[in-house]
Length: 144
Ligand SMILES: CC(C)(COP(=O)(O)OP(=O)(O)OC[C@H]1O[C@@H](n2cnc3c(N)ncnc32)[C@H](O)[C@@H]1OP(=O)(O)O)[C@@H](O)C(=O)NCCC(=O)NCCS
Image (cartoon, rainbow, N blue to C red; front, top):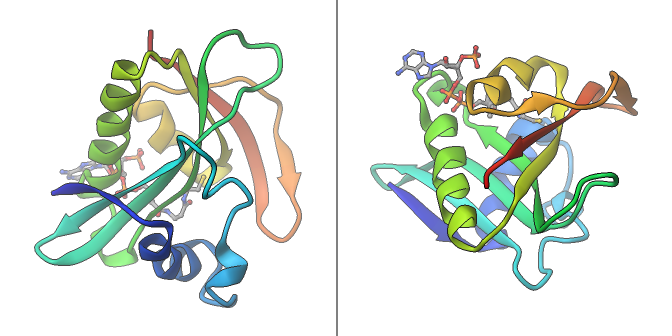
């Protein structure tokens, strides 16, 4: 089941999956987590949080219209490949389309590019490195 959750709910999984559990929960916060219009989604398998993603109102230069940035996409290791991430992003696309949002973009880790391609994103930047994390591409999906 997919739910709107708080930033406090996402931080432990963000740390575990995206920061190798090395940071404090506060260090896992993104600057835009509490912006007006920002929201966080969780996929619960029974009572357990299995997958998270956060969405912040933010445009990408050169693209017109109302936009959101997707950040902090993570599925617990044991629950990957079950379609939870796909369902979460598709939920967000449907929700944001209802909010008259035009596109979603993200900085995608190279390893996650096939996942984002699978939910309709396309690559819009050359590869770039994020220090300490690795190669990325900017990806984008037009939703209306
Ligand atoms: C990227 C990530 C969030 C994807 O989440 P997920 O819940 O595993 O995503 P899905 O299960 O929807 O899709 C993953 C793969 O499983 C496959 N899959 C989906 N449903 C499936 C099913 N029912 N049975 C078998 N395979 C399935 C998909 O085809 C997809 O293949 P791909 O690797 O070619 O994209 C997850 O791998 C992750 O947390 N990775 C580490 C952190 C990370 O890199 N985050 C992204 C930062 S930009």
